[in-house]
Length: 282
Image 1 (tube, rainbow, N blue to C red):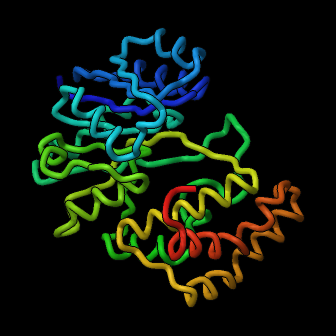
Image 2 (cartoon, rainbow, N blue to C red):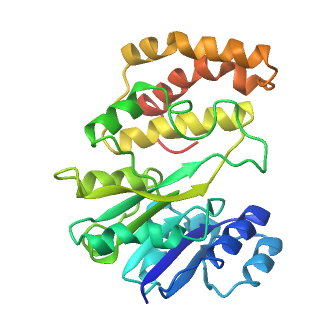
């Protein structure tokens, strides 16, 4: 088996179906398998999974862990190269699989590959988007990226050489398993490279969902050794271009929800709370 695609699932619904349809539409000469670790989905998701030639392993929802569950999926797989994506991350074209593993085939020194993430156009999305600098404008994320050679590793869409994972498994970690892996293998800065392969992946948020997301990020940064100080909070809260963008969005009627209005004010404080005070995920 050349490639194993590992997907943790939970109530994935129609977005999961789109992801699997795109995977099985790949134009590749490589042999590949799709390994699903499902943590207690409702029947509609299980019915979707039954429509595809996947390998399904089920665990109780209480046993899900971002690091350990992905390790389990990899343990159940057979491929030399491992692609990890989210259940709602849809490959952008039929060359995605080849694009994700080709850098490791061409260069044996490359340990892992980071694929691209683009916003979806087939669903509503957060004004500040869900990936990239518009969302991650606070300095803890920027500091990490600058420290790790302009790259923030993400299991939303990535590939790893099996022999590297065998030496550096994710381990049991409740969030930021990808950043913890990146920290483990980082030496020269060339261990992880970017790929042309990309997925479509988007989130929208209510106020409470956004608060939880940001607090959990702050907690995750602490798990991987990244501190976010109150001085950074104050500096990040007063980034002028964020408020210029907010006013433009209000003027153009693109900002429609309370969560979108408060985001540039509240993200720094939420991340700070999670980083300095939270003792677990929200």
